Image 1 (tube, rainbow, N blue to C red):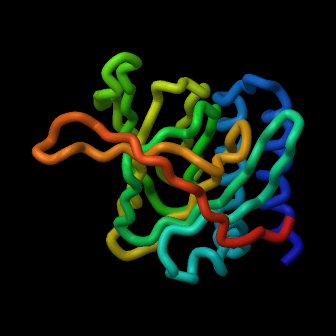
Image 2: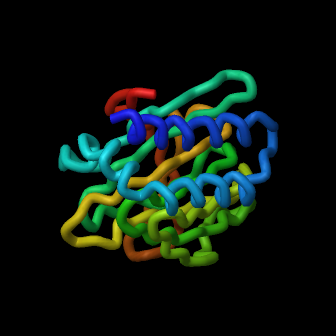
Length: 192
């Protein structure tokens, strides 16, 4: 179990080191985290087997948190074909990196006057691939596990605690977007 635990500790250490600045170099953090994932995929899969095998729906697991500067590191388990609502990140910067499986990330920009959302880009992330956002209050996205059979796992690093955020729904017939407050739930803490 030693090497498996060390790999997760390495990911945690990289996130904590690079997240020490108020506005970290997220591209550099993504490259370093991605390198560890590419080099240690079997060890990561073995270490994260319990959250991967639980199959209890979408879950967020806390790996690390710090108050100054604010930072949280989470592992998320995505059930097969799970799709999040379009949501923001409460003005936090963030990085999301796939550990196992494949995710689709659809980005949106929110008009500051009307609040309407406009699709901006689409990314597909495999193990070691990342996307990030700089804390832009107009950024939102939707994520989906591309597998119909297998749970995906991802690592998320945020510039604070994402306890509350807004989820966006389109009114019927499709028209204006309505923001609804949501709360994040932590399923548990991963051993460090």
